[in-house]
Image (spheres, rainbow, N blue to C red):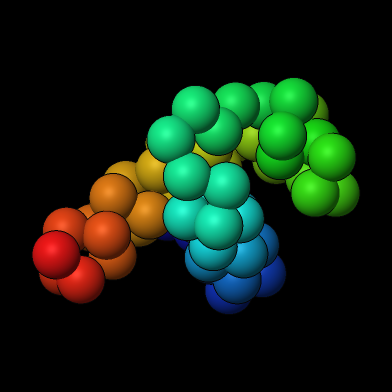
Length: 58
């Protein structure tokens, strides 16, 4: 289970993924200010959130 802080950071990461679009990877996320630890621990959740948001918009 994610803490409120982790949920917020996950949403921020998902937003960054959507803004970048296809091909977003860890390098892009690090340039946006995410640490490798955040990418490793929250990346899957953020990817799911970004994909779900994209699917709802389509």
